Each structure stands twice: as structure tokens, then as C-alpha cells.
Image 1 (cartoon, rainbow, N blue to C red):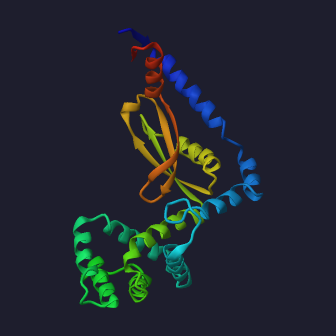
Image 2 (image 1 turned 90 degrees about the vertical axis):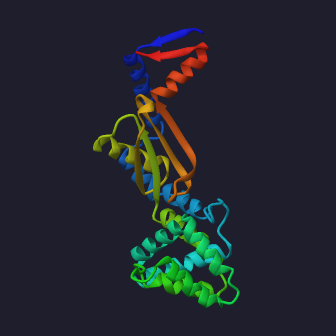
Image 3 (image 1 turned 120 degrees about the vertical axis):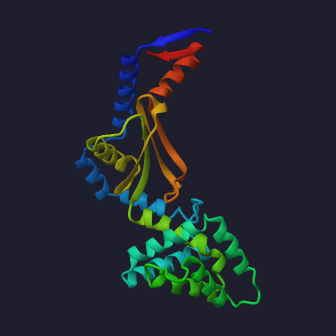
Length: 259
């Protein structure tokens, strides 16, 4: 098997060159970005993306899940408890990942001796046992409201849609950056600025992950269907040294080593 040796300096230079070229391809100045957002650019496309985010399916919003999520959001804004409701929603979402909670929830939902309102009250107790409390006054009332409307089984999906709406409506896009070494604050700021344009959003939530296996360089992932759990990304850029070495290995049909 052929063995090709690639100098580390040259490889790192290629990474930097690729990084610069790839990033510059979607970078504009801050002034151009503001002008772009002021026109029909970012705002218009963001509005279109909001209209395509229902249930994480990228279909136009319709149906009870979207309707009840909007009721919850409107109520939280009216009562001025938006932050507290968002925190409660995240707690509910987390509960649905717990096997013990799901087992107890199933027993409640399948207990036909209970009315829907009684089921709602028991779900509230299950989510917040005695001694604990929701951060908002809205969430427990909303769960009872779902019980009255026979929509308790939609609680999980309603919370998912609420959080997706929260991200999209506020123009926040999560971006995962995997690097071989930790980024400096200046590098983070530059990536956020450039990704605001690429992701067509007002603000970037940057999640940094260090992966020494990349050797050098970085990868960027964004466009998540679920922006809370960071699931199903639709876009990505790989500017790592590992990718370059793997590509070189495929071209020469052998093992590539970086010295």
C-alpha cells in the first residue's frame, strides 16, 4: 500500500486557505448585512422559515399542535411570564426523555377511572412533586386547559413546537463548531458574525465542542430541525485537517501521514 507523507505546515496552510475561502464566500461587511436585513432579505426569509417549521416537519403550520403552542406563547406574553414559561417548557421537554416519568405518565393516561382534568392534575404532580413548583403560574393552568380540551397526549409536541417557535421568531440559530483546539473570544465573535449572514438570523447561539481527532481546523453545523435538542442539521462545513488527509488518501489510494 502506498504511503504518502504530507508536511504538517503545508496541511495547516491548506486548512487555513480552505477556511478563508469557504467563509469569505458567505461573508459580507456589517454594513451590507444591516442593509440586507433592512430590506427583504433576512427578515423576509426568516418569516418564510417560520412558516415552514410546524412540528419539525418543515410543513406549513396548521393543526392543534401549532394552535395550542401559540395559545401558550400568547398567554405567556400577556401575563409577562415569557421567560418563566420557556423554562417550564424546557423542564417538561426534559421530563419526556426520562423513562421512569414516561412509565408513570402511561399509567395516568391509561387510567380510565380518571377524568381528563384529574389526569391533568396528576401529570402536574408527576412533573412537580410536592415541595417543587413550576417557575410560572401559566404552565399548570395550561396543562389543566389541555385536559379540558382532551389534548393531554399532545403536551410533548406542543412543547416542542413552542421551543421551535421561540428560536425562529426571535431569529436565534444554534450553530455547533467542533474544533481541534478551543477558539479565542475574537474567533468566536467572527464566526457568529459570519454565520448570522449564512444562517439568515439575528443572533447565533454558538456551541463549541473540542475534538482532538480533527487534528486542526474546524467543522460547522447548523440548520437544525429541532434547535433545542440540536437534531437533524441541514447544513455543514468541514474545514478540518482530518478531512484533507482523508481526501488525499482517497486520491492516492494509500495511507496519508501528517508529520
